[in-house]
Picture 1 (cartoon, chains in turn brown, blue):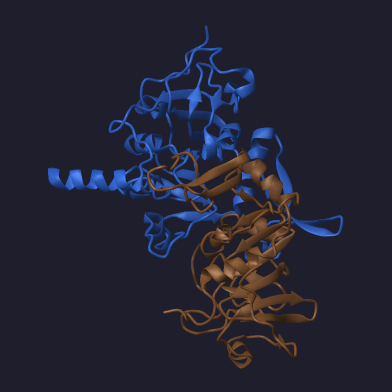
Picture 2 (cartoon, helix red, strand yellow; picture 1 turned 180 degrees about the horizontal axis):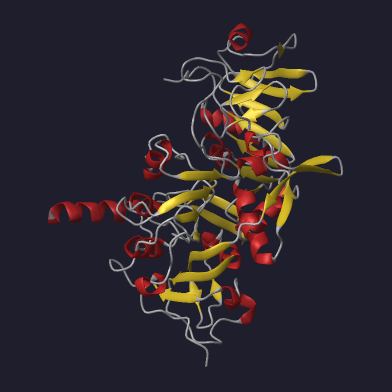
Length: 224
Length: 256
């Protein structure tokens, strides 16, 4: 059973979604990151890009109203917002490789203090699931990670160096876990905000690398 | 008058496929996936196949007994897969592929999804290789050629030509000009461009020449060789909603 202390998955994704800029093109990975699209962006336009060529998709389709030709990269039946477009896979990845994606939010097994991260293969696994993660991680302007603070067996996911094969090196900017918000800085991993009900000592005890902790750590913002 | 591209059945369209060829299977999470052609190729039995696809299984909108790459693998028709996913995307998912891969009966090449698409685009565009930043610094790049352009490191990737592409489209005219609907486009035009022979399962009745406005053609018939209309269910396979899959399973249970 994973540790449920601190933020819910939706709160984690809401916090990252607050960082999206006006008009940003956003690509969300499979799993926890898809929850970022539930955040209420208010008047701020944000455009969701999906690797399978859907640019500008909207909320999930209601049950029974699914368009059988329309899914996002997670295979979820979505809707299309006015002004959306369809392209093929090479164009969808052309947008990624040429730096048009402002941010990608990905899940991960491990993030290292130097910005390396691993999310396609577990230790000792034969084969894996890369999907679009390597293209996105190498090329998006910002790479955010949403993951639990520790593994199911309680091992830290924030580490000095990744022990499992990496997806990309030195690319992660920001990490949200159920324990807090972390920034990868030139000096290392910094704790920026802490989840309600979690202490700095608990964060340190569950982090596998040196942590830069300011004198006062503000609580994780739950509203933009 | 050239030979018609319209074939009467999936079986007829795949009848001459030899052993040891490379076949691309289009689609992304069932959308645009050539479900009926998978079934026909499993029946036809060509062996030693190298199969190119995003993954070895579609999404949740097909019942478990629908054809997919797993049918070809179970038949020992597949030598190797080239995919962006070889592991299941959900912990609960079980792949026929995994069983064969783990016991060494099948080979696999894992490729980042954008690189997979671009390798086929390159093959279709007459480009032998290209450099990409994806996978630089990872296990996939070990021992391979990289080069620095404008201060950034890129990995050399070769074009991926196909002998056959199996794809699914929304509309076709008799020349094979195609239109896709919504997310159905995905890998499909790229696989067709990369292939010597493209076989298309078409959802709507095949249209006469001129019925698709030239401005609305997504893939030129130059890249398309064989067309088969998908018959209505249950003769032909169509994606299903969860409720339809459950109703079908219940009816099958009652019939047993």
